[in-house]
Image (cartoon, rainbow, N blue to C red; front, side, top):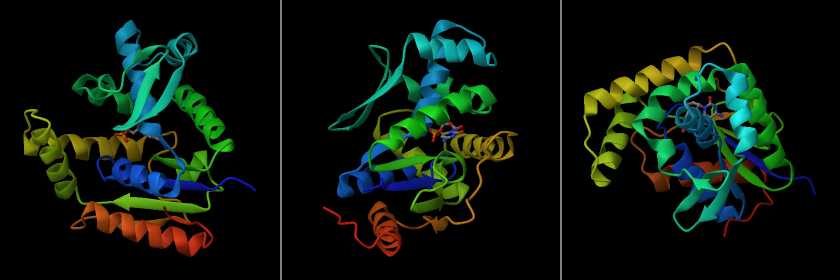
Length: 228
Ligand code: DC
């Protein structure tokens, strides 16, 4: 039987990874966070002190220390070679640079190839910006998750506080709006809803409500799928 692909795209902090993880678990599918892949390349570049506009050098780093994922009780661990970088790829330094790295054509081509390989052999829930449009254009289910900038900033602010990190709501809102702009205005694969994606606005919804909405969409597209 051909593999089932569920693509979840949308802007930064719309809740994609939280709901994608739950949906994958409830379907017993593999979850792939493609943003983590762009973040890992960015971190590798910062660590090796190569220019973050030098695609060839960044791709060479990936060849030296291949990117891999390992499922864990708390989510997904990210490795570069043998080095675990799960926490490091969420740092402020990476946040600031990742939009630039993800705008590099050759880096995108390399990561899209890896993402397509990952999806070829297993049922998958993949989240990102270009999954429905570029990576898995044949996906049986495509969701485009959105929420207002204010709502996304509020969620990120509360998440930071709950981790004991300092947070400034206005600063977070500004950084989200900036990343939206960069992600949707870049020349290569800009953030864009696929023509056949279903848009879900999560403003004012809690996680469970978003998960339930997406499960209904999945069931309408692939009626045979059973949730655990
Ligand atoms: O979802 P995130 O914030 O972890 O994504 C990090 C960056 O990577 C973000 O600036 C957009 C980019 N990205 C992308 O261009 N394509 C993807 N498929 C996933 C993420």
